[in-house]
Length: 78
Image (cartoon, rainbow, N blue to C red; front, side, top):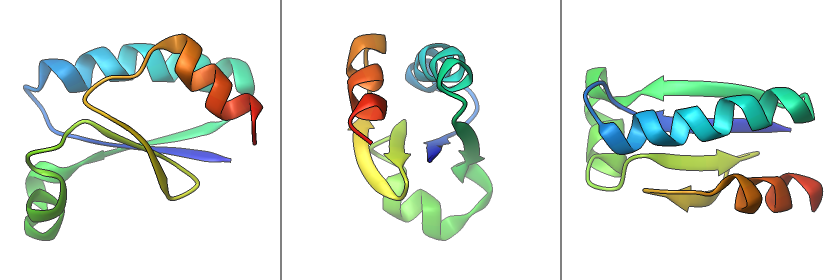
């Protein structure tokens, strides 16, 4: 399983989501890729107004916010 977090610097929602996702990913032994969209025009076009966006194995599971409980449920169902 892989979690992918699309975010950009200076985004407080992104920082909040990283603070929730990173420790849960570690507990579950799941790889987490944090991708900064600010240097990629295509990613900015796709995700710029929706960040943070969290994907699990390429499928969007959250945007803007996710709780620890919601993330655990997503990971447990996989």
